[in-house]
Length: 247
Ligand SMILES: O=P(O)(O)OC[C@H]1O[C@H](O[C@H]2O[C@H](CO)[C@@H](O)[C@H](O)[C@H]2O)[C@H](O)[C@@H](O)[C@@H]1O
Image 1: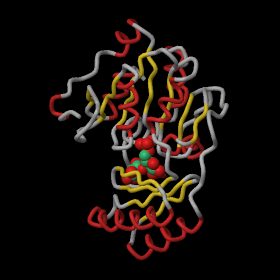
Image 2 (image 1 turned 90 degrees about the vertical axis):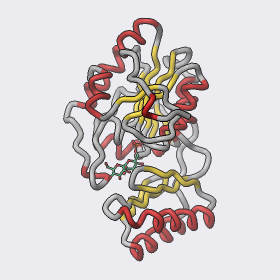
Image 3 (image 1 turned 45 degrees about the horizontal axis):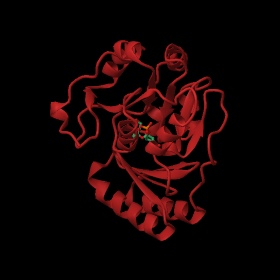
């Protein structure tokens, strides 16, 4: 784990890709789009989908989005046809042709969702019900973070769910899926297999993806200034990501 203050900028992507094949894994919120006050309020460049597809083509198809959002939600914000994607924190995966990889992601129990819904109402938190989990948002009320975490802990213990902390949010999912698993699943397949894996992300859940890349001989790039991190390099913000990607 590194102190982000010491992290240098990554080598230029063109130089990396010129030296050997790169497999690029990109987080979405906080990496390709700035964070906003609510999940639906993000400002996505209208041509982001085609630009990502063009980048994927330049990388020989070795580009995947790896998001905490569901694939459906992600596709609603940015056309993802022709791009490999993992959604729901890595639990739902498909290749660039849209073919599912691995087992389908599972929803959480209706009782868990109901407990979160009534707890969120009582505590004044925003609940984002997702196809494969639920998120308790406290960005609008940061002083309620501990309440959100306590509610998530209680429901996770009762229904044997996993907790995914994030920026202004704590999420519950089925156990066993994370962004590292998604990276490993892609790296087992063509065209990703054998390439140098690089994960770019800003949030805690991206650390699993960065660690999976390190284990496969690659590295992570942190966006922003969160610590501690497994990343080897750092980019300061979303515009710097676009510049590094030449998007
Ligand atoms: O893995 P990601 O692609 O980064 O997705 C993580 C979560 O992103 C969304 O929440 C975050 O972004 C919101 C919009 O900017 C913001 O309001 C919230 O505070 C952030 O935590 C999304 O709502 C979640 O479902 C994703 O899991």
